Length: 197
Image (cartoon, rainbow, N blue to C red; front, side, top):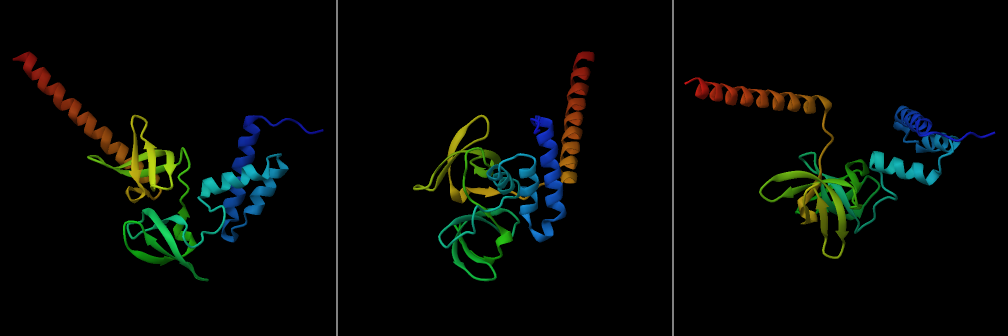
């Protein structure tokens, strides 16, 4: 008799499926994960979609003319168009200019799905993390939100940042807290000095 899976059961199965996938990722055998999830009662389509999202995989190999995010020399991924394919990889033309040949591993899907996390070059602010609201393919414009404002940006002003290393994030947090404490102490000392005069 089959039992109903709880949310915790599903989380456990998916965590184990991810562990299996990571152990077998050298062979790139996603079928192992899919089979494990199907045995747990999850639909194949849902698992395939989760794998694509988690590991930024393509639904199908890019073709000539497709837009992709391609890794640049600064390790960020910018929007580019596939101009040629070969047995060794792809030739892409970045929308901001420049061409390069690269393997599939240096490309990421460029779907601009609602909710997708990207970084935009926000005027007067610089590169800023946002999520996609909508995409107009004809004008090559993407509407994004930073949680406060919604703006339209050209695809040339959009990129994907490389994953942050945990240690670097922690260092940034420590420096931020130290700066806040120092500022607070300085303001407190000035206020105390003014009151005591």
